[in-house]
Length: 459
Image (cartoon, rainbow, N blue to C red):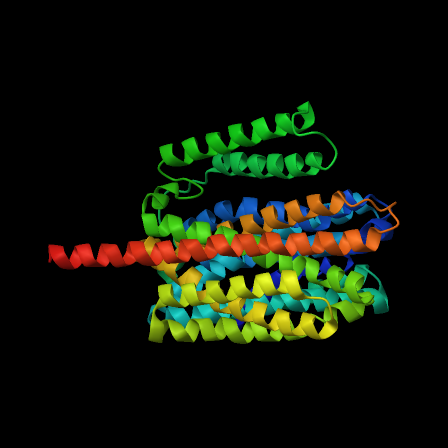
C-alpha cells in the first residue's frame, strides 16, 4: 500500500518540473513568445493550486481512494493530450489538465499517511516529502535527457507511462477500511468558493504578466489588481460564511496554524524558484547543454532527499519547531551563499549542497506542525491546506522571477552579464523569502512555548 501511495506522488511531482529544463528555450521550440512559453509552468501551477481545495474536500466526502485514483487518471489524460499534439495551445491545455489531476494526489497522500499511520506520522510524512522532492528533480532529469535524445513529446510520454502504472497499482493495492468509503456527510462541494479562488490566482498571474509590458498605473495592470482584490475578498467572505467551505479558513484563527501555513507559502516561493531555474541557470553560466544542465542538479537532488528524511528523524529528538528553525536557518545561509558566491562550477555544486540541506530539513517539520496545529479531527484538511500554501508559493515565486527575466534587454551588447545578474537577483529573492520563513519559525516557537507555559500555569 505504501508504494502505491508514494509512486503517484513521485510521478505527479515529476510532472511539475518535466518541462523545467527547456523553459529557457521553449519559445523557440514551440514558436511562441518566451512569456507565452512560461505558461508551460504557470498553467500547471494554476490548476494544481486551484483544484486542491475542491479535490481535498471531495476526498473527505467520497473517500480518499476514489478521489485519489480518479486524480491520477485525470493527470494521465493530461499527459497524453500534451504528448500527441503539435499545437502549443493544446499542449498548454494538457498541462492544465495535468495540474487538475496532480491537485488530488499530493494532499491526499499526506492525508492518507496521517490517518493510516498516526503512530509513525513523522516517518511517513518524511517519506511522502522525500518522494515528492525526488520526483521534482527526476522530472527535470527526464525532461532534459529525453528532449536531447527523443524530442519534447517524449518528455510527456515517459511520465504518461509511469502514470498509467500508478493508476493500476493505486486501484489494486490501496486498501482502506470500508467505513472510509462511505459518505461522511451530505455531498456538498463549494464550487463557487473554488471558482473565486481560481479567478484570484488567474488575476494575479495576469497582473504579473502585464507588469512586464505596461506601467503600474495603467488600466491593464490596475484592472487585474482590482480583480485580484475583489475575487480574493469574495473567496474569503464565502469561505468564512458557509458551513462546508473549500478551504477551512477558520483554522487560520489559531495563531500557530496561521504562522506555519504562512511559512509554507514562503517556503514554496523559494523552493520552486530554485528547482525551476537551476537548469537554465547552468545553461547560461556554464554553457551546458539541456541534458548537461539536468545532470548538474543531481547532487542537489540526492542531498535534498537525504536531508528530507533527516528532517523527519530529528523531530523525535529535538521537536518539530526546533527542527524547523534549524532547517530555515540553514536554508537562509544556503540561499544567500548561492545567490552571492556562485561563480564557478565548484562553487555551484558546493553551494547547492548547502542549499539542499536547509531545504530538506525544513520540509517535513513544516508539514508535521501544520497537521498538529490543525488538530486530530482535521488532519486531512490540514494536510491539504499546507500543500495549497506551498503550491501558492510555487505560483508566486516563478511568476515574479519570470517578470524579472522579461525585463532583460536581449539587444544589449552585455546581455549575458544582464542575464546572470538577473538570475542572481532571482535567487536573492528566494533568500529574502527564506528570511521571512526563519522569522515565522522563531515566532511560531515563541507562541507555542508561551501557550504551553500558560497551560501549565492554568493546571
